[in-house]
Every structure is written in C-alpha cells, then in structure tokens.
Image 1 (cartoon, rainbow, N blue to C red):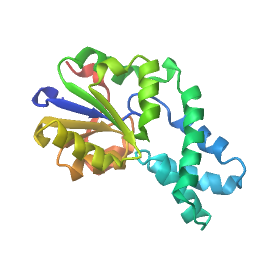
Image 2 (image 1 turned 90 degrees about the horizontal axis):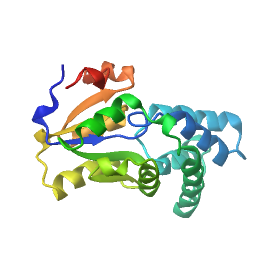
Image 3 (image 1 turned 120 degrees about the vertical axis):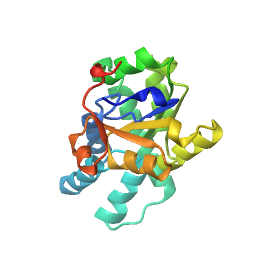
Image 4 (image 1 turned 135 degrees about the horizontal axis):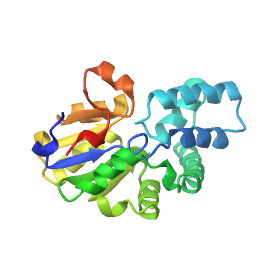
Length: 210
C-alpha cells in the first residue's frame, strides 16, 4: 500500500485521471479537422493517445508539420485551439465523465493535502470546467497549457516553495512521468496499466487507501 502521508502536496493530471475525457477529446480533433483527410486525422489521433499529457497546441503543430509536412503559424494554431476549446466546453460539462474513484479521494482528502491540477489541457478551459463541475473548491490552483507541463511543475515548486520530496504527481501518461521526473518529485501511475511498464508506483484504486 502506498503511504501518502509523507507528502505535503499532490499534483493531479486531469484527463484520464480525474475525468474520462479522452474519447471526447478524440472527437474534438475529428470535428476541428473535419476538412482534412480522414487517414491523416487518424494518424494524429494515434499520436494524441500516445501523448495524452501534451497540449493541443503541440498536437496541432504535429498534425501540420509532421503528418502533412506543412508550415503553420502561431496564429493558426491558436485559432484551431480555440475552436477545439469551444467544443470541449460543451461536451465535457458532464459529471458522469468524472472518475468516481479519484474524485472521491480528492473530496475526502483535500484538507489533508495541498492539491493542484497540472494538465496538458488549456488552462482557461480547465478552470472553466472545474468551476462548472464544482471541482475548483478542492484545489488550491489549476494549471494547464500552453505552458508545458514540466514548466508548470517547476513553477509551482518554486512559487510555493514546495520541497520536491514532499510532492507527489498522479498521472496516466509518459508525459506526466517525465514532468515529475525532470523536477525530482515522486510519480504514481493511474488508470493506464501500460504505465506499469515504466516501473513506476501504480495506483490500481484509491478505495484501498486510508
């Protein structure tokens, strides 16, 4: 059993950890890129699923630069990201998508640990969703892209003067693990059994934790 009592703070990824949102985000890319060949969009979805912790900004650039071998301006990326965000704000306002196991742990323990959301999803969108879903009261702060996740973690450690050994990061992707490892904080995989292959501590369920 993993003992969380040595930690002062817990950083949470959002997609796949607090909310089962990945299928909805798949649909978002399909809608925003509907005018492009289906086979190319499928390639992007493979990349998206393999890199859940990366921002949509990175993924749109990957689509054009790596899959289509085209250049894309920052302004064009921002326009696509905004279209994507509008879809998400409608589709993700569904409490049934929340992962009850992790959400119950957050609600039961938010006064014991200092909790923060650190996600690859758009920051303004995340804050909107958490406010509408009445999750914001459980977190000291909510952070997302376009700032890379590694930098978000570094910023929190510096600004709040957290010692790395007192912080745990819970995520479901290799990008989450990399963000934690690069900042010297403990990482726990969750809701993605492929993470076990990294040799990380893995949480099968929070129901067995006190």
